[in-house]
Image 1 (cartoon, rainbow, N blue to C red):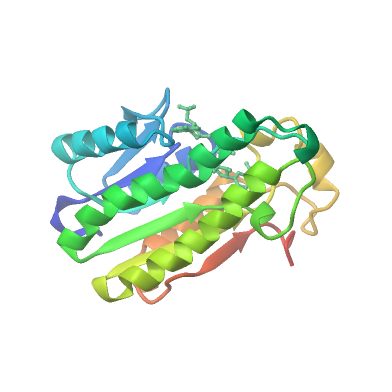
Image 2: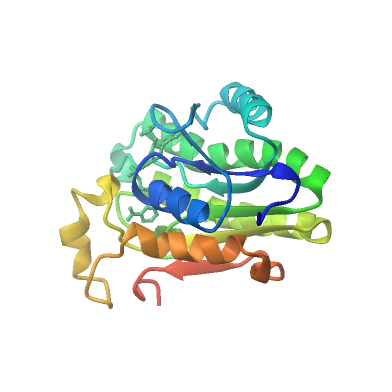
Length: 226
Ligand code: NDP
């Protein structure tokens, strides 16, 4: 059992795409995994809604155990040039992709501090570091996630809790089905990435051997940001 005290690994957005591959990989690694989605997964919540997140964490603790591994993977895109972007488009993406990660971290930290052990992995994006026209909302949320990752690392480093980020490039999922071909031309590796390749990086960051890796950003992008 890689997690102390009967703790569980919670993967947000774990019902499909990258999150599903992460959930499968962590289960193979021996973690007891719970997946969360709006409509899919073991438990349902909108991560952008603080009340809904508070409720679901209470539910997960009672039904499965304390959350000692948290993978903030839930995300969405609503692209558009900034000049035409509606306030609702901006807010919805920031709510899910950035605020959602914060709400989940807040509750998971209660459990992790109790165990004096925890692993937080935030799934950011190459877009956090290499801007894409039409993704001001998405890019701002994903860049904010990197700062959040590092701040939590500094705040929690003495408590046995690590906080790291993964920045995937173009990965084959529902989210990229409409743009993957167009984006492929810019990928130095000459191919689209697989969800399992992101899951492999998350697996490493959740391992005992990664206890001293804290506040780091690990790119899984075929050299797209290099
Ligand atoms: P998908 O669209 O395939 O899956 C998104 C997942 O997030 C779904 O399980 C969905 O659950 C969940 N989700 C979305 N909004 C919410 C919400 N408000 N509350 C709870 N769950 C929510 O995406 P990917 O697998 O491609 O992406 C996973 C993560 O990786 C995202 O954060 C994305 O930004 C990031 N990423 C993806 C890249 C790619 O190329 N695919 C590249 C870089 C980063 P449900 O269906 O139940 O709503």
